[in-house]
Length: 277
Image 1: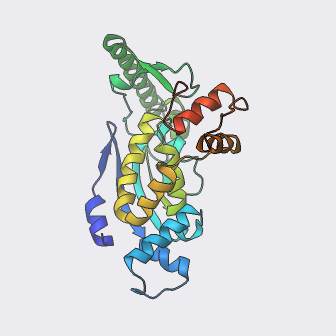
Image 2: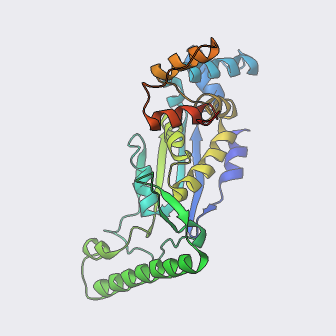
Image 3: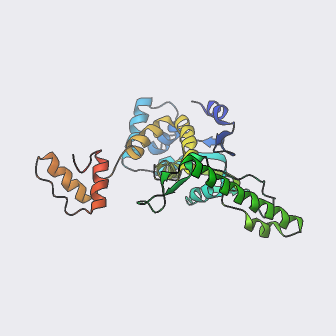
């Protein structure tokens, strides 16, 4: 896909959640550019697509990351503040965000769908557990909605009394929508996606990561395929797990006593097995 085709496809706002969006603004570089930088050869058409594919997969497999930094993307994103704060933890991007000091914040806030109102997980301190019954979930959604509505009413009162915007915004909830322009190189973007596409990432954040992943797949298809093969759909093994695998392959008894119960469960998940298998 050419740059013009890419921009034409993704220039419109891609809706995310209830009021959010992701929109492609610009890209610099592509799979060919990454190959040229890796080879330190800037002539076009000197290598076949097959050669390029092999090189990019080699770079990804061996974590030679600097050539991927030569490809850059700029995205326009609108998201709840709590999603923005998870993404901005990747401090290797450049951001220009809507400022509540200079502008009045629009009354837009995220209200989760009832299906996303869950109990706290009992085995994951930062994740969701069981989904609530419909009636209970509806009650909680109403509570979230009413709380945000009250916050914006107080915000409006403070502004009407002449209170400075930078002070009045303190009453607004984390569900308030913000917007920014983000510029990030491909290497750092892939690292962000590896974390935010993970099933353990917050559901709302994953919805943004999914859209960005679709854009990247069109932008640098060879790199994206290698990334999925060697990062997204790959697993790593500890030295203790490797010892266990060697024993399994040799048909020997496997000693897993060195692993904790959680480590054992993680090990079997990597192998798509259970303790009973």
